[in-house]
Length: 217
Image (cartoon, rainbow, N blue to C red):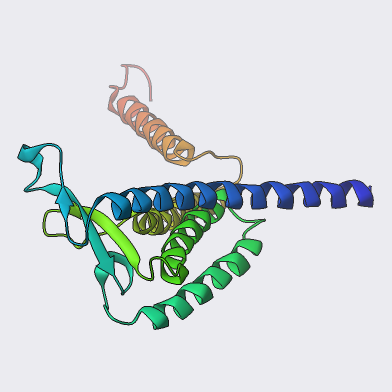
C-alpha cells in the first residue's frame, strides 16, 4: 500500500513537471522564433506593417530594450540579467510547492517561467545582448511574446484566486446553514409556516364571528 501511494505521488510530480516544461517551452520557442525573424529582417527602429490602414494603430518594430518588460527602466541590462536569473529560480522553487494545489497555480507559473526565460535568453545571448521587443500598439510601450506570457500568467493567477475565494465563501455559507436544509430551503420553510399560522388565525376569527343559535346558552 505504501509503495503504491509513493508511486502515485511520483507519477503526479512527473506529470506536473512535464506540464511546466511543455507550457514554458512553447512560450520560449514562439518568443525566440518571432524575435529572430524581427532581428534578421528589420533594422533597429525600423517598422513594418503589411496593411497601411492598420499602421497608425499597430505595427511591427525592431526595438532594443535594455530594461524590463514593456521597455521600463532602460540602461540597466546587467542588473536585470541578475534579477531575471533570480526570478527563474524563485518560480521553479514555488512550482515545487504547488504540486498539491490548484492547477491554475502551476499553469500561471509555467507561463511566467517561459516569459522570464525568453527575455533572459536575449540578455545572455552574446549575439543579441538586449531584449528584442517588436509589438507596437498605439502609444503603448513596445513588447514581445515573453511579456505577453508574463502578463497572462499573472492574469491566470488573479482569476484563479478570485474564483477559489468565491467557492470557499459559498462552502462556508453552506456549512453554517442548518443541518438537513439546502440553501433556500430554510426560507421556504419559514414562509410555509407563516402562511399556515395566517390560515389558522383566519379560521379562529371565522369561528368567533358565528352567531349563537336560539335555544343555546
